[in-house]
Amino acid sequence: MTPYSPPLRDITFVLRELAGLDEIAGLPGFEDATSDVVQSVLDEAGRIASQVLAPLNQTGDQQGIRRENGTVKTPDGWRQAYRTLTEGNWIGLSCPQEFGGMGLPGVVDAAVSEMWQAANMAFSLCPMLTQGAINAIRTCGDEALQAKYLPRLVSGEWAGTMNLSEAAAGSDLGAIRTKAVRKDGHYLVSGQKIFITYGDHDLTENIIHLVLARTPDAPVGVKGISLFAVPKMLIGDDGKTIRRNDVQCLSLEHKLGIHASPTAVLSFGEKEGAIGFLIGDENRGLEYMFVMMNHARLNVGLQGLAIAERAYQQARAYAQERIQGRPIGCSAPSAIVDHPDVRRMLMGMKAEIEAMRALAYLAAAALDRAQAHPLPAERDAAKRYAELLNPIVKGWCTERGFEIASTGVQIHGGTGYIESTGAAQHLRDARITTIYEGTTGIQANDLINRKILKDGGLTLDRSLDDAGKTARELAQHDDPILQDIGNALNRAVGDAHRASRWLQDVAAEDPRQAAAAGVPLLLLLGTVLGGHEMARAARLAVIRAAETDTDQGFYRTKLKTAWHYAEAILPRSSGLLGTIIRGSRTVMVLDREEL
Image (cartoon, rainbow, N blue to C red; front, side, top):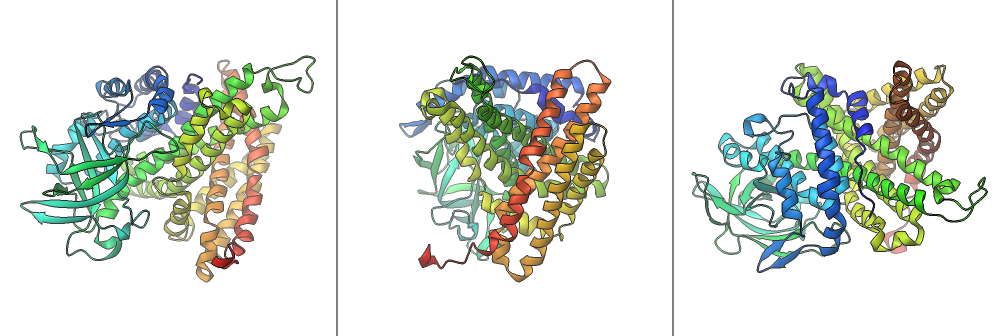
C-alpha cells in the first residue's frame, strides 16, 4: 500500500480561500484559532496521519478485531495510536475549553478528520463517534450529566457510541422496541441494538452508549423515543468505577470492509437492567440523536472524500511507476500515466476530490457560523445553509468516493484486484460510507422534504443564485480558461434551477415521482455546487498567481484542474436533469410481480 501524504497545501487553500477560516477565527469563542496555531495543528495532524495511523491501515485490515474471554481486542498498534490522540488532546480539538477542549473551529476539525480518515478510516471511527456523543450531551444534557461525562469524553479517557438500529427496526426508528423503565432517579434499559460501531473495544476503560429507547407510557412512533446515556462501567459521584453495567457485547459482525472497526451487537439489561440516564426530556430522543447523527453524517461525507484521496494517491503512484505498452505520442514503452485513458481517470479523480473537499469544508464552516456569529440573522442563514449541505455532502461525497476508489482499482488493472496492493481495501472500506448514518436514498429524502420543500426552495435558490453570479462574472473574464469555466457553470446552474422548480411542482401532485428523483437530484446538486467552488478556486488561483511569485505551480495546477472539472464533470448535470424529469416517470411502471 502506498504511503499516505496529507494534501496540506490544498487543505490550507480551501480552509483560507474558500471556507473563510480567517473570518471564522474572528467570531466569538474562536479567538485562539490564529494562523500560526491552525498551521501547527494541521502540520502535526498530518504527521500523525502519515506516520502513526497510515502504517496501521493495511495491517489492521488483515488482522481485524477479535473477542477473547468476552473482551474485544483491537489490532496490534491500535492502543498506542489511540494514546497518541489522547496525549495530544486531539479528540477535544473543537470542544469547548470549559470541558478541557481546544475550542478550535469545527472546520479545522474537519480538515484533521479528513487526514485521519484517509490514513486509517477503521481507526478514526472511534474518535469521530466520541465527538458526536460529546456534541449530543453538551447540547441536550443537563449540567450534572455534562459535568460527569464530558471532561472524560473530551480527553479521550472514555469513548462514546450511537445506538439506534435494531434487528426489526433499521432505518425505521419509529419501530424500535428497546425499553427504559424509571427507577430510583435513573432508568433501567433493556433491549438489543445492532450495527454499533466501536460498541465494545479495549481502547478505553469506559464507553458511554447513547441509546434510543421507549418509556412505558411513551406515544407510538418516533414521537415516543427518548435518549439515554448508558455507560459500560458505572461511575460513582467521586468519579471512581463502581462496577460493570448490564451491557454485553453478544457478537461482532464479519464485514466487507473496515475489518479493524468492531461492529457490535449489544444487549442491554439481560440481568438486572442496564442503568441509564435520561438526556434532556422524555420523548425528544430522536431530536437529540440528530445532533449526533448530523455530526456523523458530515464526517461520513468527509470519509468519502478521504477514501477518494487515499485511492487517488495510490493510483497516481502506481500509474507513474508501471511501465506498460507504448502510449500514443511516445517513441518507447512508458509509464501508464502517459496513456490518455489513464490520464482521463486520474484527472477525473483529482478534480472531483478537490470539489468534494471544498463543499465539505464549506458545510463545516457554515456550522461554525451558525454556532458563533454574533448576529441572529447570520446565524440563522448559516444554519439553513449547513442543513441544506449536510445531506448533499454525505450523499454526494460518499457516492463519488466509492466510484473514485473503484477507478483506483481500474487504474491498477489486475493487480488492483489483488489484496496485497491495498487498492481493493479502499474500495471495500468505501462501500459502507453510502450506507451507514443513512443511505443515499435517505439523504435524498431528507434533502427533498426537510430542506428544499420545507422552505419552498429558498435556501437552495440562494445558493444557486450565488453560483450563477460567479458563472456570469467568469464568462466575462479576460482569461479564456475562466471563460470556459464560467460558461460551463452557467449551463449547469440552469439545470439545477430547472430541477428544483420541477421538484416543487411535481411533489404536490405525485410524491412518489419526486421521491424517485431524489438521488439523481442530490447528485446533480453536489456536482453543481462542487463546480461552483471549483470556479471560485480557479478565479482565486488567477488572482493569487498575479499577486505573488511563490506557489505558481500550485495555482497553475488548481486552474487546470478546475477547467477539467468544468469541461468533463459539470456536463453530467444535463444527463441528471433528464433522469430527474423523465426517468422518474418510469421508476414505478412495473408491478412488483414484473420486477
